[in-house]
Amino acid sequence: MKMKDFEIQDYKDTRSGFGAGLSELGKTNPNVVALCADLTGSLKMDAFQKEHPDRFFQVGIAEANMIGMAAGLTIGGKIPFTGTFANFSTGRVYDQIRQSVAYSEKNVKICASHAGLTLGEDGATHQILEDIGLMKMLPNMTVISPCDYNETKAATIAIAEHDGPVYLRFGRPKVPNFTDPNKKFEIGKGDVLREGKDVTIIATGHLVWKAIEAAEVLLAKGINPEIINIHTIKPLDEKTVLDSISKTKCVVTAEEHMVNGGLGDSIAQILSKKMPTPMEYVAVNDSFGESGTGEELLTKYNINTIDIVNAVEKVISRK
Amino acid sequence: METQDLEKISSQVRRDIVRMVTAVQSGHPGGSLGCADFLTALYFKVMKLNPDEFTMNGEGEDLFFLSNGHISPVLYSVLAHKGYFDKSELATFRKLGSRLQGHPSISKSLPGVRIASGSLGQGLSVALGAAAAKKLNGDNSIVYTLHGDGELQEGQIWEAAMYAAANKVDNLISTVDYNHKQIDGDIDDVLPMGDLVKKWQAFGWDVLEMDGHNINEILKTMELAKSKTGNGKPVMIIMTTIMGNGVDFMMGTHKWHGSPPSKEQEGIALSQLTETLGDY
Image (cartoon, rainbow over the protein chains, first blue to last red):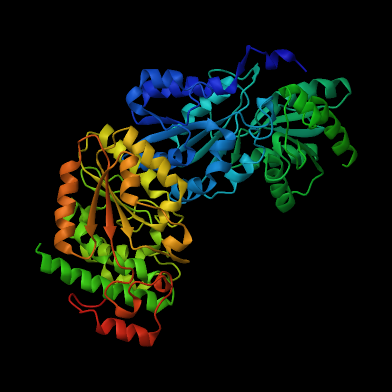
């Protein structure tokens, strides 16, 4: 693999991509407003708060009220972006999102940091692994999980133009920033990062870079993988997925999420209906996380680079 | 509009409520009957509205959010009489394909409804957002809400209550339907809430009280409430009502919170409610 295709520009956290995107929106779109539940620094919303104090709402540790207020702000033409950790953005306020946002078709952008295991030492109370599933089950909801700083920034800007509820998932750690900073973010469009012929690896979020690392290992073993970055889990880019899998005849999905309800399940649903194909999941196996560093946790819960490699070898053997 | 005109409307609204829930043998008559006078006064005298050209954003007009969505029959009847849609549509209440869902919804674009409600405790937060949007837009209209008393047991209400006072949300007039009843019985038996006036005052709200079945008192109190907007504090009105008011056998008991009358009981109920504007 030519590594220059995936040159690491720098190491940055995806949440900072959100903060940068929100700050830019503040300057370009006067209808954009932001709400935060006492995590302004963690969500990197400080710039927007400083630049547009009149359009920033500090709600305190009261996430349910924040979601309801966001729904109300749309009545009056505002485009609210809510910010807190993924756990408090979804599970804690599921019914508020369900009734006041999704069912009520409100143009609210639920922006969630510290998703998955890689928030690290805080442990399982904060490491939500069910959020993609919770959000994708809601009718009207768009679910987006970008892979690096540049893509998160672009996604933040793009969702302001989309009319309807969006769940935007990102994380805490500094990770390789490798996507083109000038690339326009297209909601619902899968991105073939590398063409190959032996297996399709479909990844989302932080696991996209892990898939690229896995590809290097696989190439050394004589396996030529195709890699797709699925940043929009709902609506899913069926065509890109099926075009690839019809060529490679097997697939591995990779995500920093529970095996139940995540990207893998969405892919499996399409395959079972349209193209039954051997498939392996790289995802957390029905378990809560725990304290540790992000890398230690990805390894312990079997969603690191080596796990993608192993899953590829297994799925190829099933062809 | 004179008080006696409002009383005529609320009598017809009560008939509509009884007929709607009887027709489909489901729905919530008790709280609906108890709030008929208040909602009639609100929509026909208190609020600045534009029923002919309903828009989601409602710019330049007052907004109302029904947080206790189960009393949808009273809202639907009042909206129909106000002209948001034809009153013949009341006959579709809770039926398949109807815009008049069991609990208010925007999924079928019913004019007059801007948010779904039914799962309790969410409407005050929504109103805070709408009130904030009005301020950002330089729109000096008022946002109104109605809540059940039992609904105040939801924690989100108190999150919103704290926010409203701390942030001086003073274009908001909320009302609690204080009928002392919830599905399982008297509030004092299910989960006593203590002194509601003192509670809301302690949360930093301007608190008024009124009799929810005295139209003159409702109008006077609402005018007082309006005069208190713009003063840096949200306004809460504790409105005393009788669940099932207007139908003798339904009054003052939680048993009619969510149960419809039989056909025979409907006849008795309607004999106590004057048909003033023609049944739908």
